[in-house]
Length: 227
Ligand SMILES: Nc1ncnc2c1ncn2[C@@H]1O[C@H](COP(=O)(O)OP(=O)(O)O)[C@@H](O)[C@H]1O
Ligand SMILES: [Mg+2]
Image 1: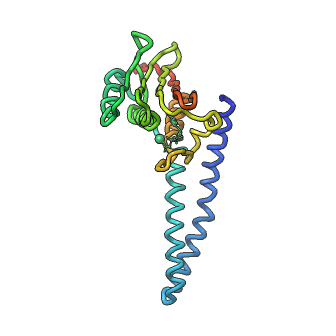
Image 2: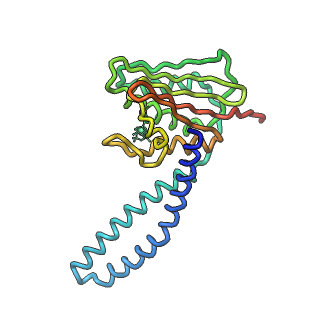
Image 3: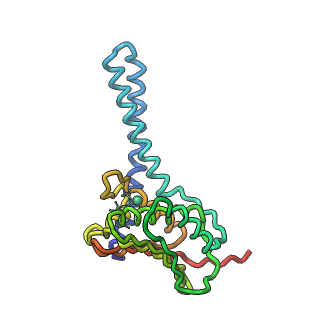
């Protein structure tokens, strides 16, 4: 799995570089098209087609911008986080309209102070819980757990669900941008989670047994506050 993730990371940065490279020729096409669009205003057909080209170029630009913004544009604003209240707040929102249980389990009684970007980290947990809710949606006894541990170096957050699980062959794909198995999915959630965790110098990985359970594991480095 480690190798798999490395490969994915390499691929992701390749895709980001590619997105960047696509911008330049796209810009030239945009300029040339604009020239034709303005020059042939009087020719209905050409005017319409160049207008259509313009719209499609704008759509591609939007994709590229969105893509590049999450591959490099995350700025951390680190804060001390009162984990217990923080997680309670997140779960309270997540429970809304959910018929199962979402439980918090602490493996250690006393945890050191957690430092992270609370908004970005919340985005990660929200995404993982949302996926877990999707995964258990057809289960009779849906269960989602958030398990917190600390090993002296890292905080370890596990988001467990007893949902549909992930096929072995697909495990290495889930962090890829635009990978989705949902008819209404975008496939961006986990790649954003991955980018946010990496920005914190942490790691995110997944274990799963198809049709049984899935466990996302986040390792967040302990950051000592000395100011
Ligand atoms: N808890 C989970 N249980 C089963 N499959 C999951 C889980 N979380 C993610 N996946 C798989 O990973 C894919 C990508 O997830 P994500 O990036 O959040 O995109 P989306 O939710 O839009 O499909 C999902 O479509 C699903 O196949
Ligand atoms: Mg998702």
